[in-house]
Length: 212
Length: 104
Image: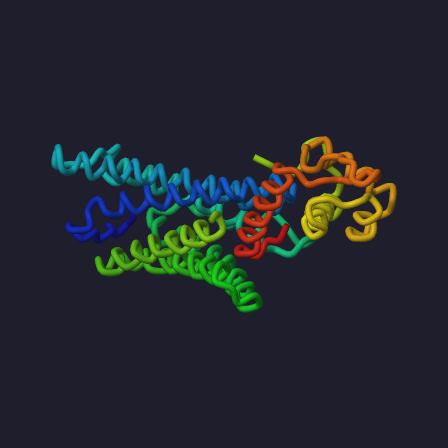
């Protein structure tokens, strides 16, 4: 894994897997609704949103599978599936998740950019052994931009649904802000994951309110 | 599930956006008029030219969102159940897009 291993509280084992799976399901539901929106409007902006949530959900589902397998191996065999001294199946999941999240958040950033000012940008990705912290910092800034736009929209509209979306994105950004420090404190690992699940719960609440 | 008629030509984005709005405006006008209205009422109510009215009415007829009927010797257009469903679905979709701040 990373240069410094993550400190996961033993009582929290498996909960993070459940959180990833739960978030993936909500993400797929939002992706479907965003796709319906695209069917109505035909706008590329909405297609970007649908694609972003699809990619994010698929990566979260992958992370749920790999972390679930890691915990399963640990509890049944007492060890994790490792490819070499530093690279495990968990790392494969994290790499897929981080790359896919960067693509997904970039698409969300594009969908929040004003018309005519959309430019594809590729955040610099360096191969590094301390990838865990690095990726989370990049993802924090990308999601921070999306959250900032959603908060600005909520401030202009002041309705509950846009407030739920803004808080959802803000909590997901907080998850990425907390994780680089999870190497030093297990409390931050738990807090980060609670932030992630609360973020997706806020998005779920909005989805239910707009589907009724 | 209702959606924007696929037979609609995909043109530029502002044109397409206005098309969805125009479908909704026509259907909402019909509801306001008690479910049916004469072509001239639609023309003024939805603020359309005669040419565009014919174009959109034809699309709505093709999709089954409205139907032709006769009332007091006059031809009128009536909103159908499918038209009502389309409007309901559009309202939900508008709420969703409004929540994200990415309007239709």
